[in-house]
Amino acid sequence: MLDDFREDEIVRKVGGRFKLSTLVQKRMVALNRGATPLVDMQTKDLMQIVVAEIMNDKIYLDTSGTVKIAEDESETVDSLEALLADDEGPGIDDLT
Image 1 (cartoon, one colour):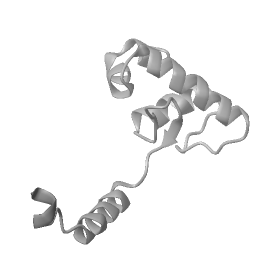
Image 2: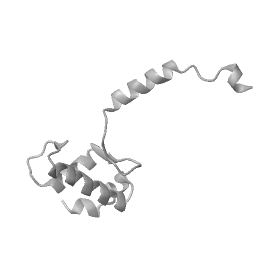
Image 3: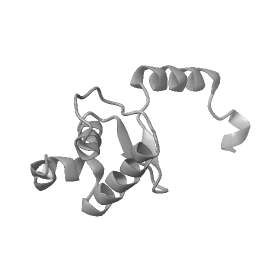
């Protein structure tokens, strides 16, 4: 399990060792306070759960340093397409 931290893949996935450390610490606090694990594992080891959540793209650290749960991409794409459909772009008056 700790071998996962020696691999560069998890470090690149999160964006650096500092971000990885921050993400792991914050997620472990949340799990200790009763948050539901986002992966189905037969272990009580929180570190293994957090590593699995990161490697399965279930959680990430946003730009403000807050742990976020990854959304279903299909919902994000659908909402983006709906937003773009409503936007007609700049009018001729905006360009002059």
